[in-house]
Length: 168
Image (cartoon, rainbow, N blue to C red; front, side, top):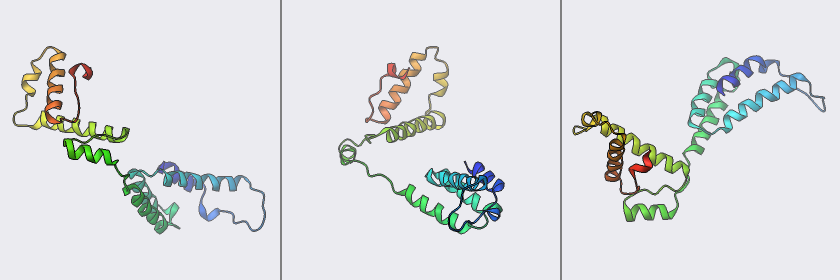
């Protein structure tokens, strides 16, 4: 999206913008100016961490040289909005306190929990001093590998119910 915004500002240069007074009939140039503004607005509304880097890069471009401070301020505001996390439900905190296990409460938190577990598994599997990687390479049955993964996940976290049959 950043590249598209930059290209729009290169093709439809701000110094060539038409300033209208009173009433006017929009022409092709006005439509191009509107399209350029809509692209920038779409980037600013994406509210992703990648957006912040893109805005800072655009602020350094000569095509957007008339508003670098405003772009940096917008990046700051977007960063503040991104950092305002949604509160977890009370039930999730109660379960964490009671069971010592995080209970995902939506698709995003479930995905995050799953990816964290998989990253931990990969690290332990590849780098732990007692890693069974050499023994597992000798297995000729996929079922045995699935059983090992299910056992590791069960041992590593009591908050998930794992069956090696569900891993296939």
